[in-house]
Length: 254
Figure 1 (cartoon, rainbow, N blue to C red):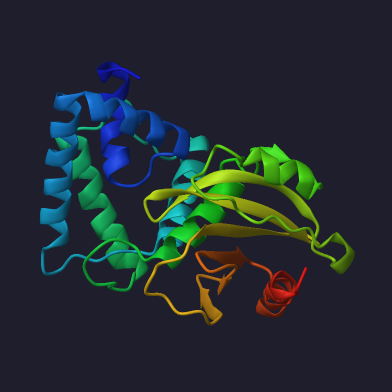
Figure 2: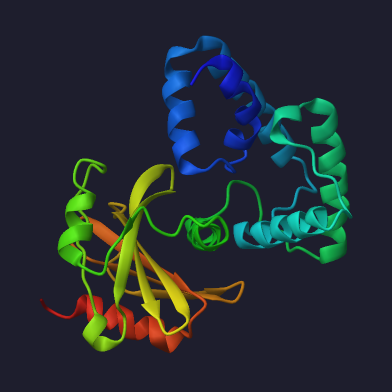
């Protein structure tokens, strides 16, 4: 990637809206390019300044994705024109911010406080994005002995891979995703008509070991430890009881 290719992507990168492969390419370029790093720092400073304002509100990541999908649907029917990323600049950004602020107010988004979205928001957003962007799998296979070796050399940890086809949760593939500012493993399971993403990532040192459950934006999430230094997040629009069943299968001794 060069500067001409990087510049139109900087706004999306700072906003956390850039897909994984472009994010990694941009970060590699920025490490060796001082002007692009300076532009990223400038955009981040502007973003942080806006977020520090008293009346700043943040929608959940999943809600943002649904709004974006609705806008694209309107655009495809000729009812709305969305500026391409290549025109990203101060004037369209301010115009878009004003329009989005009005939309936020009319939709009744709840205040989330200052700072970035929580990890649970990221998990939901990545799950929704994987279904919307036709990027559910980098490796498609029902054989865990095919999926597990595929991750070798792509991550700085070795994710466990399990298949529960005999229990009604067949493994259908895997991919590399991006959560909490780092690459993670995503395993995809199918439960009837529902897709389930199970993200495997290093566990925070200060975190507990109990299973935690969350329901948000119509999705169920389970978080549990899979080893001394790794944890898993499962997310789906399947019922919480079904996700709990998958978690118990994961916790079953091999």
